Image 1 (cartoon, rainbow over the protein chains, first blue to last red):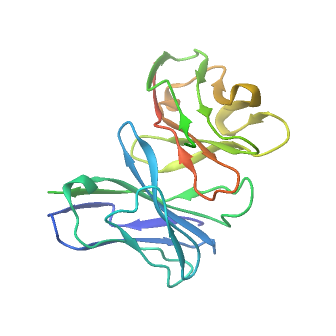
Image 2: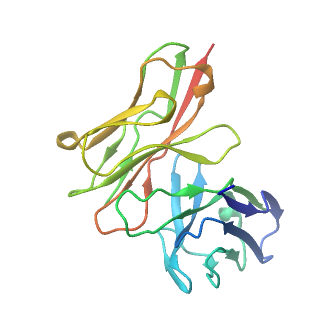
Length: 115
Length: 113
C-alpha cells in the first residue's frame, strides 16, 4: 500500500532533550516536506527536500534540522526542543515538487508535547 | 505576502444542508489550488485540486470547487452534506515558481444529524 509513515505518533518530552521524528514513504517520491499544524494557523512548512541530499528551509525552520540521505526517509530533528515546539507535525511527499498540480500525500501526524 | 485565507473558522450545518466554504488567495499568475480534508484523528487527504483548464473542479465524495480568477477565490461546495462530512477542511495554494504549499487556517465543519 502506498503510504507515508511517521514515528512516533505521540511523544511527550522535556525541554532540551534531543529527539527525532522519522518519516518514510514507499512511493519513490522525490519531494518530501515537514509541516507543523497549530490551532488557527493551519499548516506551516518547516523544511522541504527536492531529492536526496537537497534540503531547504520552509517558512518556520528555526529550532529544526532535517536530513535526506535516502530517497524514502526524511527525519525531522529537534536538537533542543522547547515548549513552543509543542505541535502536531505532518510529513508529506509528492512525486516531484516541480510539476504543476503535483499532489502531496500526508502522513498520519505526530503529536509532540514539550514540557 | 503570498497567502491563503479561509474566513469561516467553524461552520455548523444540519444534514442535507448545502455547504460553501470560502477560500481566497493572494497570488498573481498561474496558481495551483487544493482542498484537503482532515477527518478526526486522521491525516490530510486530498479532496480536489485545480491547476489549469475548467475552473469548476469536481473532487471525491461529491465535493466541487470553482476557481474564480477575478475574485481570487476557490470556494468549496457540496449540495447536501452528511454527518460523515464532519471534519476540518484546508485550502492550500502554490504560487508560481514556488514549491511550497501555503495553507489556510482551516475550517471546522460540524454536521448535525
